[in-house]
Length: 106
Image (cartoon, rainbow, N blue to C red; front, side, top):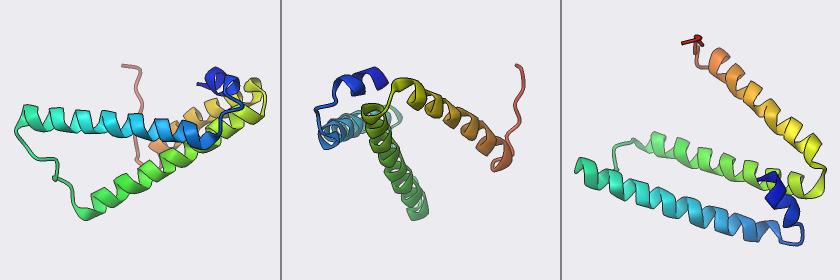
């Protein structure tokens, strides 16, 4: 993704986000309809609090993508990719500390 974003420096971030949202929304609807058709079930299984968490998660994802695109377009790829890989460490620490997840070597 980083190489593509550096090649698209003259393209404004809102255009990239429009197509990101369009692709994500279309793929989500397709998966939702296929799941509803395959299970003969409706998708309204969550409580209103569950939908609130889904909305907050999608807003956080959009913010991460916008800032990631801006970082790849403005700075060198070596520094940005190093910072991007640190998020993997944060994800493991969150799983371990917040969700009490244990990791095994299979």
